[in-house]
Length: 179
Image (cartoon, rainbow, N blue to C red; front, top):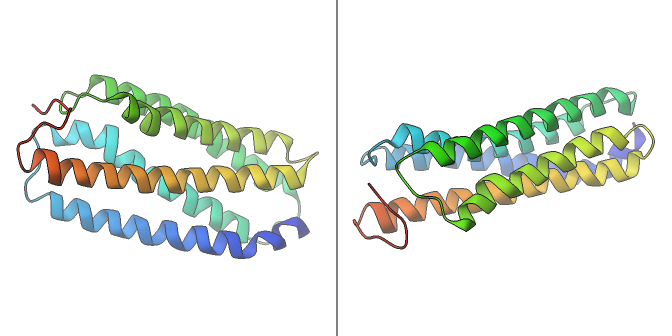
């Protein structure tokens, strides 16, 4: 697939960054584990795990783009599977956010943990659907979805760390309910 050759550097950068950020997230979680908040597991499923999933999807999309595909249909099918799976997963994340009792999500949390990732997965699904007829546009859609997931992951990782350090660890309530 000749069109992917023009994207080599982009996916090397995104894939490398995603891989490094996954590792960094594990380091941060290890450090935070010394003083976990109550009900940390249910909050983790709603807030920490999706961050790793988004980084991993960006990493996987980058790895897929570097493979020597003969036709767009094969990679488009994989994009579609990832996109639809991401949509379903995001619905589960929104449900976990609503049901967990460690933290009361604010509007910004709903936006960055539920709405924006959903948009990224919808874009990826649409890119898969248009790929056979509009390869170039599909590649821009996949690139946009990968970047969105990277930036969402970075923002959410920062949000989780600052919440833990500045709010939970110091016992201060900065607009969030900590139980």
